[in-house]
Length: 456
Image (cartoon, rainbow, N blue to C red; front, side, top):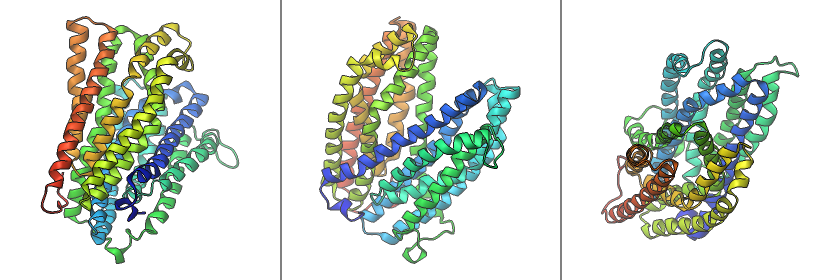
């Protein structure tokens, strides 16, 4: 498969890579839904604890996915250039780095989480419930980050199916383990929220063993191929240089949610609730396009490493074409089904009306997200993650703070000002991403030598 990435027809590769990746993201979403459903069955405190813990867990996932993205870019570039021993070194050092990062996260987490939960209003039984869940999750940080890093080895070679298979089985297993560990039975005592966290870690351990078996079959984790597990400062620095901007780019999403929630809150709880429900609907509609990002990342890395830049351009053009077809269907669903979709989640008429109005606007933003994410993936695949980070900071922090302030405090446009802001900010960020991506492809293509590991 790794050789196919630089020779097989690009449209075929996009489909072969994107479809399993999108299915994997769907089951990853369902995995989290299962946790939420069982926590709700247990108690209100348990459900609230999941919500309160989400930002911390999101940061852990952002670190795992960010460093995985960085490793995928470096691995793909080395493989595309025919430097297999260098790729094996990157793969093994990526695993070393993920363990080091996990230890830092655990140390910081155990030291700060209690105070952070208290700051967010948790106390007494509620605080204990939050800590029961989060302390177990923190203990599993090395497993979580290893899962993402081992998957980077597979992704760089075009294997998206293994992670999809893991997530599908994991979701089914979680449906069984959550209630068993939560309420007890078959010789196990009831563990409460510790049980939901423990179920997550058990599933991740099994997934890691499966992914490791798949990754070892490629040879890139073998010492005979060039893998080395003693820390190599050069390679660790290279992966960090790619992984940190990618992780920070993901973390800007949390900043963006905070900013828009802050400005929406002045219009009451109904506005905040409507946006929360509407964005979940948006995410579901966009799920089929998510795999396009992963496909472009892998193809850009391998073909960029092989200096086949016409194939890089073809990859992004094909991904954007497929994304256009998919979002055309999403536009129809969101625009004409706005009220019906909102009523699936709430019967509050004010929330439904507000959310439906936003969804009709959001219907015309969906393709901007595809353009933005696909071009960002291209930048990361060509080892320029800092540019993607700057786009993220513009879209999630700088532009919203400026535009939402003007729209609500100076011009008094009300909620429509915020919805218009989301529309203009997203499309402008997409345009910036297109311009940067084209310039980067042209610049890298004109280089006279293969860039070293420090590129980016």
